[in-house]
View: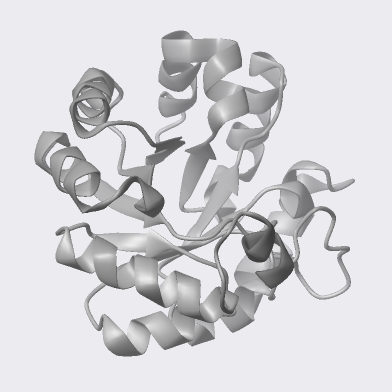
Length: 224
């Protein structure tokens, strides 16, 4: 992938979102559309952003019984996404059915542990052990289920890459040097994530909310 940066388009209005993609598309490799965008704009919004000519990453984090997830995966074929997410905690059968139902060429990746969580948050939900242990546990399950890869923080991607050499690794929660962490807890810079083995770098606010989004995207691209 020539440019691994996918812009997380968490912008509530469609026209400003499309205008932002058009502005920065020479300096990014794709666009990530998450739950907020999809709920607000649906099929029309996805198609409008797709017209910009970049690969689409539908970050919908499917998590339900296997049959429901498989049908949902079939329903999004029309969007022709390059990448789709499911939750690894949905279990092996759910992930297997998700991959089987995905369109040809679409990478299905499993979310292991949200980058807004840390070990204390895990404990509060009844999961004991470190973030690294939980990510590796779910990565192994996703691998066994035949998925293409996982979503994890830049702090864990190097560890997972060593165990899953040909995996496809999506790293969100990235902050260029000098940027605040916001609601993210397990953060690294885009360069660090790339060096650690990330396949895709998901970057939102540092570009979307920058005073000059083009300059911000260009600066990030230059570090890679």
